[in-house]
Length: 293
Image 1: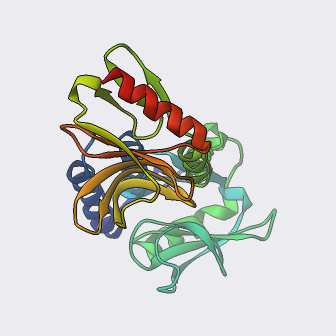
Image 2: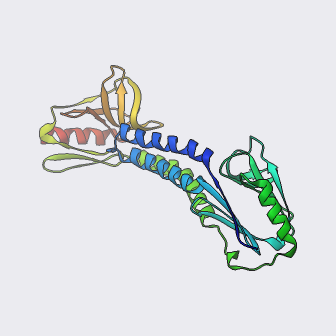
Image 3: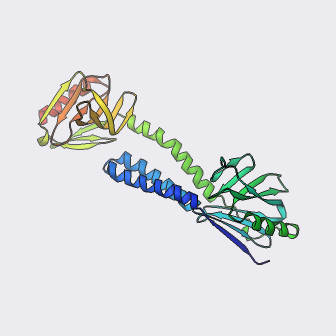
């Protein structure tokens, strides 16, 4: 039998993913690319949507004399089944709740990029079922059912197609681990070093301030009222990055709430508020800044 090939465009996936991808890119440039944490988060989200597009922009089913093979997108997801192990194939209509994507349903695993139609395969060896989305379910089911009685096993298509699944698992793991890493990194105390001419704040949202640029440096026992976070990190008592005060002015915070005193540094840039877990260290850094101005 000549090789049969059927390709369905992932119209639904493309319509959904491309606008979201473009929106994420736009938001990245709106929020700015000078903050490393923002860039990391948006870059990861953008990369995720790009990979989803590469997987879900089409689905191809190939039927030869011995195997049924299907691949999604550029082939990151690819599986092969000997026709000799297929007990039956029938055209089906998926529930609207099944949607698109790769996931378990009440009828087994579903691989779908667009639309509600699919073929359902039943296997002799396991009795399990899977559904593969297609816009030609009747034709494909007819071709497979004609072939399964005289099929042969063992062709070069027997190589596993798990690379894409491993990639998806890695992305899910990264999605879970990223908040943990951000909490750990963001919770670390800001490291302060001083050279002959500059004050350097290292870590998340770090910056360099020239001593000659400092207009004033004071300590205070309480913080001004904070209205909102604009591009920063907030977890528990730790506040880092860009925030807006109640008077609408913008500030940079490197603070642990509830541990006065707080240092307020005013220069040509945004006002900077800084303190440490140990109040004596806060006072020591403040004295050092005043000596170098």
